[in-house]
Amino acid sequence: MREPVWEYLIVNYLFLGGLSAGLFFVSALATWLQEEGRPAYPHIARWGALLAPWPVSLGSFLLIFDLGKPFRFWKLFITFRWQSPMSIGSWLLVIFTLLTMAYLWAWLDPEERTRLLNYLPAKVRQRIPAKAVKWLEHDLSFWRRELAMAGFPLAVSVGIYTGVLLGAVQARPFWNTNLVAQMFLFSALSTGTATLILVRLFDKKRPVALAEMRFLYTLDICLILIEFFIVLPYLIHGKLSVLAVQDALAQVLGGPFTFTFWLLFLGCGLLVPLLIELNEFKPVLLGRGQLHISARWATTAAGLVILGGYVLRYVFVFAGQASGFR
Amino acid sequence: MAKKPTKRYAMVLDSRKCIDCKACIVACKAENDVPLGVFRNRINVEKAGDYPKLRMSFDPEQCHHCENPSCVRVCPTGASYQREDGIVLVKYDDCIGCKYCIIACPYDARYHNPETHTVGKCTFCSHRVDRGELPACVETCPSKVRVFGDLNDPKSELHQLLASRRHQVMNPQTGNGPQLYYLL
Image: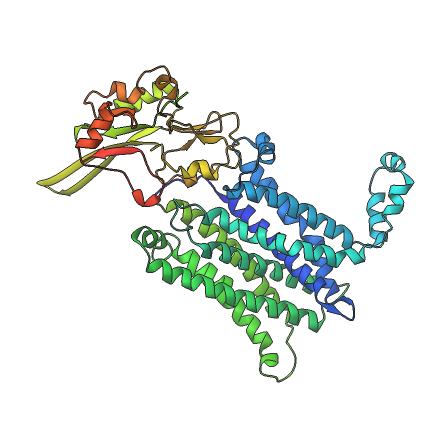
């Protein structure tokens, strides 16, 4: 078996980049959906906005740290090579991160911005011109929706790109299918949704409303179902494909990654949370009343979805590198 | 002025002559200062059968200097590039060590240099070739497995071997268009 050259830093990065894309996507969706001219799920939108920039920033840092020559990372930004997914992706990451920051800024209240300013040492603060300070007090709530709309394609691109980075390598049969990009995208959106479920459950100041939970559950159930619709064809198609692909897939169908893939990803990461969420949702589906919100079950489901998202990246990064044409 | 016909360097290997002496590997290491633990070329050994019906084959391999090198395509900075004569090289000063090319190479011909933290690979000894000499592995091979030359030069030994002998490339299904030709 080949020695992997991309290891946990890359696994973590792929997970974190996807998580940010998911957080932003769900937040943007919650902003875009309106009720009486205002965002339908403001708390979800705000939490998503507050969290989205950080995982991707940390992930990008890990990515740079993984380079053999970290101090040369700037060379990525003096070239653009459209045939290299990594080149496209590094530009995409920068634009997406900047946009999530702007979006975060738009979701802060003017008082919060002023409070942030007070964290600066007095010496620095005095040098900021009054005009700029005044600017902090502008009401940017109009921009929330605009930035959300602008960010949709970027968030989806970042989610897809983490998969394309692997899928565009024809030398590794385990990766070399468009299904990997789709898998990573929907898994990313799902982990984002799950994180927001967790955050809303633990937000004691503004307890989670039934409508919010219903929105998040609906989204997550759809996303997990889509993941099943991708991963099962991936396995079946792979099994019916040429020998190199069959050999590559043997790693999850009776090889070193079988346990991790089936039990931790498909079982704990997809099936169990799906069943829990469906069970909580059952009264709505059957038209017999309202959604359950059991904090314990919801936390379990969300935690497992996040775990599953991580395991998916782990399996793909390592199994993919071990695959080849001989 | 008529354009000079471009060269296209390639290598023909007659694996049946290989005796697994590894002189090519040593010559490459010495010529190119390849660090300990990594290699630019190797000899794939395949053993098959049960005693007394045994078979053993040696296939030397290195970078195939492909026609459509996937390593060059995925390089985000353009450090990996292909010369007009087909030789695939790395500009070490532009390599950021992302290792994407190592993963993208279907022939596992590239390595991460533990000393410089950039990516290294067979250069067909381009520094020697440019002086009109042969790559170190070709020059040193005692059983004359390797023939290096210009595909576009009809008078070259390489051209004539490929015209007169049956040959194959490794894993053509990669779509890379490998340029190490193995005589059958």
